[in-house]
Image 1 (cartoon, rainbow, N blue to C red):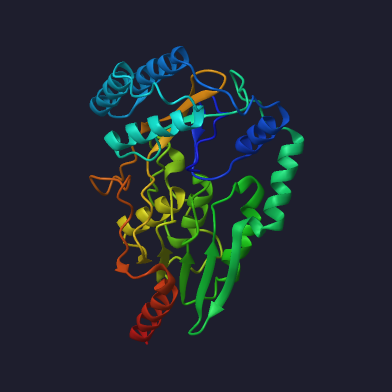
Image 2: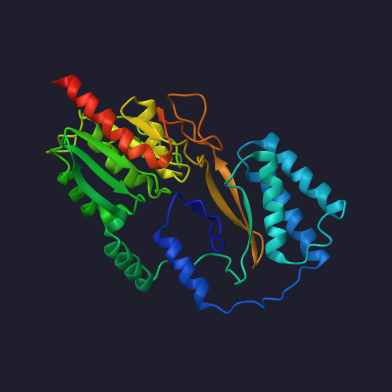
Length: 338
């Protein structure tokens, strides 16, 4: 998920909602809120800036840029640029803009949370787990539409990559429904990411052998290869098209990027949002914290990642025209095989 959860204390931020996030939200709602009219004084601003600068130098993925950001924050503070900013949310927004202007990294953020946060976040409760499961059940695990288009083209609109521990059977059933298709279109135009394990689970259906599948959150492990082939699956050799938009983010971008690098799919639509880097939340005090990029996602098949630039589609069209365009591409591809 790209919105950093202010209640996290050094927890990796992901590409969409997790069980931990739900637990933290529940915790935040449960505790009392501070006075809405709270004002920051100079001592608090100085302390937050000093700690933010320290965290950047200690943890940011690029030490050179980290030094520039830290120096800029300290310079702004010494120059009195924050003196008139007494609203804590406005202060957090200003600092966020300043560090992003230097780094061009959308995962960097200073967060103000009105509710006091603990030194360590609480674990998920049975109640929060139950609510998440029910939300996923009602939303069909974000598998919005599964259908067969003319010319036997399978179509799957997926709006997130949900937790496989809850949604694995839904994902498998969705792909099984499209197993007869001669081509398949994944619609990720409204997909802002999710769990890397679900990204890899779906990708496994698109290969007839284990394929290296880069996970931006960790170094290569035994889990870095797709669990291909999938028994009974007939999609491994079928043409694949992925619809994209500027709202396609994070884990959805990983899906697009890896498939493009592996030359396994044709991307159709708009350049994606450009959220590649993994971030970690560092608590500054009871109300302030910051998200810092510690891992830079670089695909082994290319020298660059998609942070800030997005994944370029193979066929660039307006998002609204992507489905129609992909259908025509798939139809022509299938006609060439006959």
